[in-house]
Every structure is written in structure tokens, then in C-alpha cells.
Image (cartoon, rainbow, N blue to C red; front, side, top):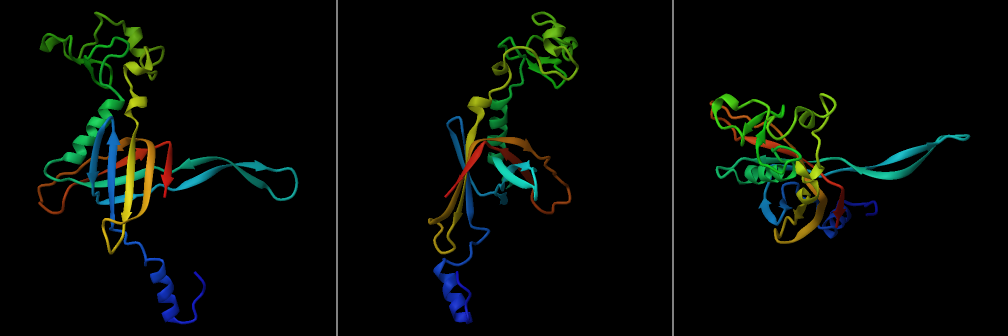
Length: 221
């Protein structure tokens, strides 16, 4: 837009572009594994992008050559409604990506963070919390090191391929909410974390939680 000499020219130029985008006019759709949910989060931080640079330092100034694109994370803050629909949707999504079961056996026994059996083969309270040595050895559960992931096929305890989904963020016209002014689609997306949620007895405000979405690439139109 050219520099205006008068306020009337400036106003005409702004109106020609439709006016500024209203930050509160947006909606979001989450989709994974055939499930879809339209929602209106409290806030959405659209991802940024940047290049990884190779520094070519032969002579003179250092020449920085871009060779790879990368993106920042998309953070979305949800307001909790009494049906807890958004939270349940995200919990189910994360449960699909990484299973809470014994790796390498195909069984559905539930393990805690230390790979202790919580339910499944446990037949009494005395066996809960004990390692399952009946079908899987200690070595196969823990691997060679204390921090190594369990042995067995990756798909036995994670489902990244089928757990990837799509996040669509639409910005809407200030005059017509059915008119989309921009569309951002996060491809191969999945929720990487759900922040803690605080409840309080003081009765002020509404509970919220933030979700960080990772993705492989995005499309902006």
C-alpha cells in the first residue's frame, strides 16, 4: 500500500484490504483416526517458521545459506466446558499414539512408568506393582540400560503412523463469520503435551489447559 498524503487516502487503502484482521475471529478443527472436532479455543498461537543455515566462510563476510526449513510448535489454550469434550478428545488421541501396555507381547496388560504391572496378569492385590516375569524376562522389559526403551517392535507400544492427524485453523471475516480470510493446516500433527490444569475452591475464573501440537509441515492459504 503506497504512502498516503491524507487520512482519507490512508483509510481508503485500509478498507480496500478489508480492514485489519480481528484477532478474536477464528475457529479450529482437530482430526485424527476418522474423528473430527470443531472447537473455539481461548487462544491459538500460530506456528512460525525459519531456516537452518549453513555458514560459508571462505573469504569476506560469512555467507549464510539456507538448507532446511523448520517450524515452531503450535500452542492452543482451551477453556474447559462442563462436557470436557476437548480434553477427552485429546486424551484419546494421545492414548492412540503411545500405548500403555506390555511391549513385544501384543497383550493389553497395563504398566506404570517403571514398567511395573498394574493390571492384566495381576490376580490379586499382592501382585500389583510387581514385575511380570511369567511371560517376559527382566532384560526384555528394561533393555540394556536403565534409560533404554523396551525391546520389541516399535509398533508394539507406539502408533505414530496412524496417530498423526490434522489441525485446521481458520480466521474469519469481521463482517461475515462464514467467510474465511485465511486457512492454516498443520499436517502430520499430533498433541505433544497437555499442560497441568488447576482447579480451585475460590470460585474465580474458569479452568484452562494448553496443548502443544507438533507437526511435519503446514499449508497456509
